[in-house]
Image 1 (cartoon, rainbow, N blue to C red):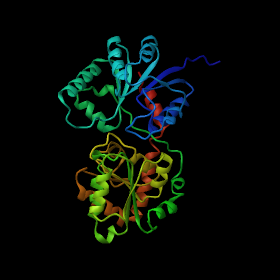
Image 2 (tube, rainbow, N blue to C red):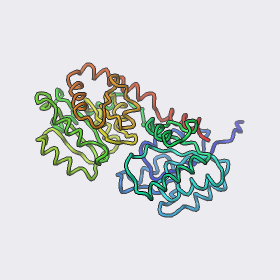
Image 3 (cartoon, helix red, strand yellow):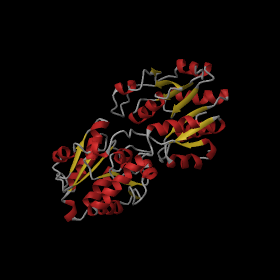
Image 4 (cartoon, rainbow, N blue to C red):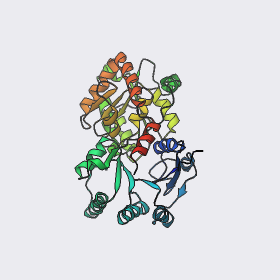
Length: 372
């Protein structure tokens, strides 16, 4: 009889997200783990995720986001042999836990994506610097989403030995052909013939995501090429009206289309109908668009400030990288993609091969091996 004691893991985050759910499913399926999931809340006004997402993996505990949760704090305090994995410090409870683990000199794990490089006021900078000081003095293993995040923490003086690159993972459980089943139907919906060139992208429509730069790049294409190019932008956000106005200003109304948020399943169908995906961010801590494209076997043109693009794209092999502010270079690589369909097909196969190296089960194994 197997009497090996199970590892008890508490996975603590602000809200449920699709990409973290696939990692949680892989952890849940490990028979050696008792997994407990904690959310501050099930939805957030900034995102379109539905509350049902929080129950995909199992029954979570909702600990609240306005005040520190004494239920979760007591759980940490009295369960000294359990493992704790905190996703960021976005609410009063997770910030309190960082202080508590430091005071108790207890080991724990915390996962960050790359903070945006923008100026903070003095108070916010001081608070962030204080918490970084606490982290450095704690028995914390820091998991970083992508190489950009690893380098950020190294520049902030964190020891390389305490940093683990744990990127975002997505399901890789269908073939390329599965994602292309609706290709004809979807392209027809956007007046895109099979001989036309269809580009798909999407995320929150905010300045940092760089969709205005992508529209400029399309506008700068040679006229002979441009007439056969269609672009679909999927998402919602405060920049949407400005983007629509830019499309109108460039007389691209018949070539560029907008859709609100889709389910991940529908979004993958649209990516499967594309010839190319573009990840044009001025800044994206990581971003799922590059990951989704590679699963569907679609090459990516991605900026060097998009974390997943920088991590996953091997320039000229499964896509192209460019400087995020160089619109002319973005135009150039789109043109190269259009003019070389054979090369694009080969790059699509390479993109899928890349995705196969980053399955959720691989991510779960990596997390468990590094857990303290």
